[in-house]
Structure formats: C-alpha cells, structure tokens
Length: 434
Ligand SMILES: C[S@@+](CC[C@H](N)C(=O)[O-])C[C@H]1O[C@@H](n2cnc3c(N)ncnc32)[C@H](O)[C@@H]1O
Image 1 (cartoon, rainbow, N blue to C red):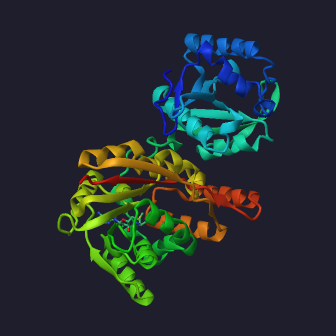
Image 2: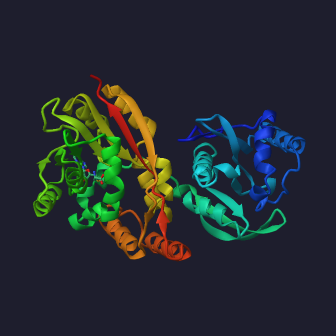
C-alpha cells in the first residue's frame, strides 16, 4: 500500500536504512519500549538491523511500519503503519512508536488516524484493530481518540493485551460522506443553548487571542461575520472600544444579541445578513472575523471573497477554525464516532482555507494553533450532547448516544476532578494588500 498523504504536521514514507540513527532514539529508549514486546535496542547497529527488516518487509509485502517525519523539520520522529496481527492476520493492526521528545503533541493520534483512514480508503478493509498492554494508558488514549473502542482481551505476541477496534462505517467519509454543511447551521439550536458557547471562561481565553491576532484597537472598524448571539462582538467592543458590527444570518440570534448588548450598555451595530453576500459597501472595515463560520456555508469561497471586498486595503481577515484531524479527539465527538465522522467531514482542511484566502487576493497568511485546554463539567457536556442530537445530529442512534454517554462518564471519572479537553483550534490571519 501507499503511505497516507501528509497530514497537518507529519508525513509518512517507507523506512530507509539511513533512518537507523533517528530510529535508535525511538527503539533504543527504554521508556518508549516499556510497553512494546521487544526490548530496547542496545546499539545503533542493532537498530539498523531492525530497520533493515522493516525496509525488506515493506518492500516485499506492502505492509509494515513506515517512517513518521516532522514536516517542518524534516526529522524522522518515529514509525507508524499497518500490518496483519502477528504477521498472519486475518485482522490488520495499526501500530505507532514515537520519540519521547515529541510525546504529548498529538502526533500519535495524527499518524494513527491517517493510517486507519488509509486502511479503509486504499485497502477497503472493514475493520482495523490496535493492541496495547492494559497498563499502557497513553496508547489506549490514542486508540480512543481516533475513534477505536475496546473490543476484547487477547493473547497475542505471547502477551496478554487489550484489543481496540474501529469499523469502516465509523470513519470519516464512510458513515457520512460529504455532509451538507448548511444542514448543521447553528440557527437550528435553541438560542440559550447556543449562547452558552460565550461562557465567561471562553471569552476570557478567546477575546485576548482574537484582539491580539487580528490586531484590534480602539481605532478599528471590526465586522464579526456569523456572530451568533454576539458574545465575541460585545466582548471585543468592551475590551478595545473598537467600532464593532455583528452580522448574522439567524434573525433570532441577532435579536438576542441586540437585547444582551443593551443590558451590557455596549455599542455594537447588529445586522441580519448572509456571509456569502454581505450587506455592506466595499472597503467598509479594517478587520473581518470569520470565526467558526466557513464550515456552515455552501459557498465558503464566496464568504472569503466577500470579506476581501468588505475590507479596506491593508485590512486583516481572521478565520477561526478546527482542523478536521483534530475533530475526533474533541469532546463529545471523542465518544460518538458518527458525530466525529460528520464533523471531521464538514470542517475544511487548513490548506483548503489557505487556498480560498490566496485566491481571493489575500497575502501574508499566518496560521496559528491554540490549545484551549478547557476544563469540562460532565453535566454540561451531557446536556450539550443531548441537545445537539435532538437539533442537528438526528442520524445518531439512541444506542450510540447511550454508549457515548457511558464512555464520556468513564473518561470524566478517570480524570479525577479535572477533566480537560485540549480542543486545539486555529486562527488564520491574512491581509488585503494595499
Ligand atoms: C459555529 S457558530 C460560530 C459563532 C461565533 N462566530 C463563534 O466563533 O463562536 C456559526 C455561526 O454562523 C452563522 N451562520 C451560518 N450560516 C451563515 C451565513 N450564511 N451567513 C451568516 N451567518 C451564518 C450561524 O447562525 C452561527 O451563528
């Protein structure tokens, strides 16, 4: 098989003999090898022999561990790949080993997710498994993050292991192929439920990020497109005294925003309007925010072009978005595979958004990843999942919801009081030249 296409931060290729030095950092490290059936490799020449076996195996069978390469540095940081369990199958497993200095960055999830997707796309497998020692919590967490579920205890490779599995139908693009993005628009949600996204802790984290990244000050005209119930628009106006306009398609959200702004005595202009045909003259604003809105549009490219038109020369657009590959590890998607599949499929890839921006004429595109590390509360997450299923994700069965809630409670109780979702989110800022 071909290795998967590069993902956000990593690329994959068959191993080469010259990878021995880099892979010795992985296979020679007792901490990395602690939960693997083989002992740490004692020397680079011995690692070179192991690499040679993988090179040969991949060349002969088309299966096996491939090198995982950090795209930015070009450095080999580990291996990941697919092969028949115990080399005779019939089940196919995904395995991943990464250097200790790149742990806790989500690389294993990124790589294993890409290989599982390739297994379904290229090999047309119905199911992929992964094996771990029961004590290897980090590896089990990766399996869960890529949508695998506990399958059974097994005796394999001469060890007692836990087996996790994922079915083809649970994976992005298979259960819900290219969903209609407008079918998930937020206007379907009850207004009070939607407004909870602007909780005090969210505003405290995001408003400084938006103000800093979009370089907003008291002298800027800001347009917040898809402002929802206006939490960001109000908080940005209050924090910076900028002149802010909130534009939103759902009239009941705008009505709610207007009433809330009057209560706060914050001056924001509210307009009901469509992101794809903005009701503003050309060159009206210094900043346009497109925060978590492009994925809800049928023509996101038009919204980017409209942002360009509405900006004055030299103005900045800020897109806030979630990368599709980060979706399966979020709460609640982590526990509900068909929700994860739908959400990953409807989020545009970062490079796609970059392409829209560049084609619209924007320059100086700057992409940044932010780790929200949101502390979650179980009751609120349970209620949010139920509301989403009722209003927007009617295709999720009651059995899947019940299983998702069970796993969610288990995860929350394992966290012992501090249940945190990293929720990686990107800002992409670009300039209208001039
Ligand atoms: C996920 S919410 C994001 C809200 C807020 N900007 C944020 O970052 O939290 C998407 C918002 O875009 C709005 N929206 C969807 N389609 C739109 C369109 N065609 N024009 C304007 N707003 C739209 C939705 O009603 C919703 O308020």
